[in-house]
Image (cartoon, rainbow, N blue to C red; front, side):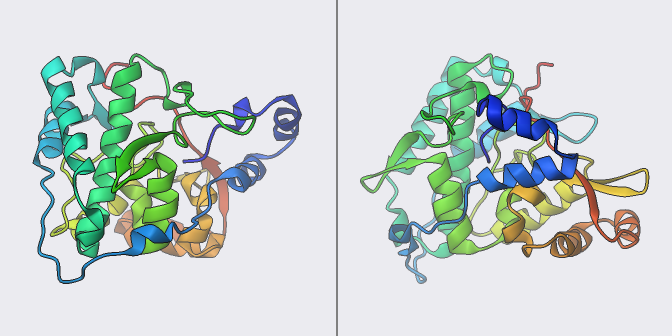
Length: 284
């Protein structure tokens, strides 16, 4: 996810004030991380039958993630027991021991997505209570905020950050826009943290379900006074959705319900972008 522009200093903030809503989204997109391949992680074994055990993560999700009345999956961070925190750490330790380069592509994709989400939850638990993940300021530099650039885990001898996983591994290797519906940054505006772990055997269907759920939620796309308002994800990462507003609209139609699709086909452009960075916690 892009870093908050509200913390980039007065000159940029002043510029943002004079922009329209869509203009501000366009400005933010300039600072969104680009997909830049970390070629070291392209190695895989197409014939590998190895299956990574994501059972502990699946148990955690089913225990602490619940949908609210608006179908937003909220995490009961404040209720996680010390025993389950240790179990989460043990799961991440087990992921560190996996030789990910020897897995097949489907297992690798599930591995990286689950790692990203488990690391994000662990960060929130380590710093809880926080109002937003942006308050976990582990980065340095004028154009940095939040935890995304911090190296958090070592895999096959390489230190890896959340941005590495999303923007240097998942996006450039798989080139699949559905990845944006799978990785979760602990924000209300983000696609749901799913209640089951991704697996190599089921990942295609899981990604489709995640895409459909988000597109059909007001956080993904909605009609406001006849105009189409969508998540800023579609501006930040427009290149992944076809690199144009028309392509984004086509993508939305693909996953929209019949009711929503009939409304989307009547619009020619996107009228606005929204995103809520507040924490996706169960405690309001």
